[in-house]
Length: 395
Image (cartoon, rainbow, N blue to C red; front, side, top):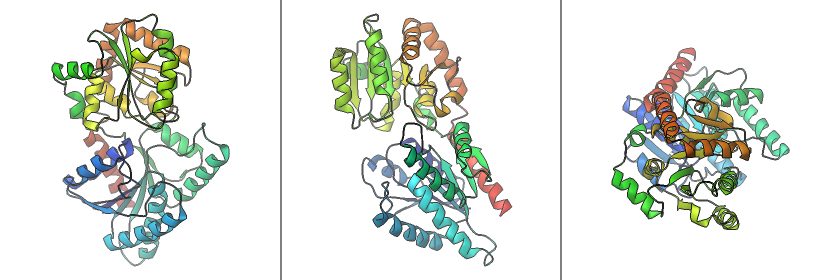
């Protein structure tokens, strides 16, 4: 098949990593694959480097930007239409909000032009990695996003989602209710998470961030940004620190709230108990997790946070707010689900794991066995490829 993927930008993120894995494996299977993306504005460099050895073509549309701006959006739409007409793909597969809207309309326009003139015309699919509307956002803005997605859903042949709950929420909002949905869990490059780092590397990592060898480390891997929930981790640490002298909290990531969070930590008198790594390259994330003992994820909105199965692949127990797709990987056999914003439950779960090394090991091993096949790249791409084939047969 001739396949075109369209994504807004190649920042370091789950949707982007998912898309690159998909493009690479589809190309390896003999398909003709092109990736269309926006320009390298922001921390895209590392992911753009990966495209050079992926075995597929990359086209950069300079006007394809994340922010809503007609000055860019209208030219981007017409440029996408032009590129798709030149490529004449069998499949147009979109990702992320902006590319998902413009790409689907452009693909559907090409479908309309070719219908009745050719035996084959493009199938238009969209992957929902996360939803633009959520409970922590202005109601009018939510209505706008839902209306836009409902309209785009009428220009979509089939949907893929990264978690069952994304399908449930999209359909509940009236998006593509008459279209087929398929869950394809977002693949992880598993080998780097399954490979135990050299103990010297782990010791060096701890030494670099002044973490004692005997410390129990609670790690959070996320952008330091709104709705990521770092403040809940800080409050639970304030309650736990006096009881557990051997506990250290590690924040992996960077973002606009860095100084605000550091100020909160200073106010709580916990500067010596919190460590910040800043932004780490993707290949160092496994080392950060292996150098830790417990992973906490307190985000208030996600599709299905990739860091949960990543930590499980490393054999670490996880504690997560019970939001969106978290319940599809976290249960009593792999960690703790706690009510969103419930600091009492979060604190109790952390304390249970801090005190019980054997439980940490057992939950971590259970988690590894649970996700190793579900999040394998071949599993995801097998599912995506089967959806393509089914839609081609129906067209």
